[in-house]
Length: 530
Image (cartoon, rainbow, N blue to C red):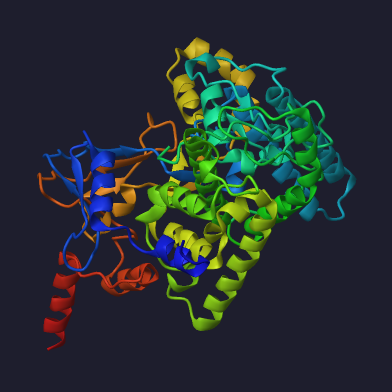
């Protein structure tokens, strides 16, 4: 049985080549793609085409291993917390946008308030009355008491609440889903450890004890500002053994034991939203690995009986370690390097980043069930936590899902004149209050194959979401014809920038670009110099 330090080092080590090759062979099966562990020129892994792709053709469509929506985006885009598809109704989406716009207009009016004459005061009063009326109508849209014309042209799935009860949190910060299957997958894979539970002030929310089935799929599946911390303890009970139900006594014990965990979880999210909300994504990974490892223990326990347990009834530490190693595999091939060493930050900034990560980990560890922390201690260490964050900072992809209101507006514009006029008579005040750029769902995700794509300042592909791409999957399109055997490359930066600026931007990724374009431009600069 390796020591804790040895376990940490093994988690941070790159998997053996045969292990990586076998995993990537499974991930790329049927995709006309393959991963080379050595893409040449010191680049490490690379994604290669095994067939010809035409310009504009989809090269890859991939669901994230882990993803999240930025906190600020949660107030603007009501989406499934698991797949990031917009949910609810178009009326609810319009109501959310309009209420935000009215609130912002009210704040601007207060900021601009100044002594005025009677005429101006009357105009200001009328303006405020109009804002209040619009706000009231927006609330009616949000709560389903008002309908808009032609919204059936863009149907959205009904929102399914979180079974732990956090869907009722104010300011849209709770979790909701597009289907019972998404709700169940999220709960079983990670959310049961990160659920804030029902807010005390909203007892009508679907509550829950936080306990659930821990069977988990460990495979694939911007900094916000938070509002005041939630006041009530949440769910988050330790996961149950796969296929069992907790007794009432166990549930009551879990509730009392989790008061401190709930407060720590609130502190963790607050800290993330005020420092770097990528900590939220890292927490999802930790939760996924913990639950997957615990599920493996449960399966092994059923198969081996009591032989794999110690005298205390807990699984042997060696068995726990092997379960953790297996559960870690989906993330094992990611970049290994602490967050504070992954960027071109000066030493004093790196020290601050390390402290932020340490504070974040302390809060998360206090929020997790002690049983899981004691079974899998190597995962809850600063080197591993820092490596997870660093993996995201270097390999994550910005997640974006377009707002469906744009399709509704286009539909209204396409109507015959009389129908259009009738529609705008009802919807016009709301449409006029919508922002010019409708905010989509914005977040970050980690994708197993996308993360293998190397950079080029003259890329042959791009990550691009089309109108029909309605969830958080990564979509990579060919920018030009790509031949079989050619590497798939993306630009990590603005490729329109000049050479020096591009190299400065890429310094944060820890390398100096030597693509054909950079090499040619450097040579041209040298020749011009001489």
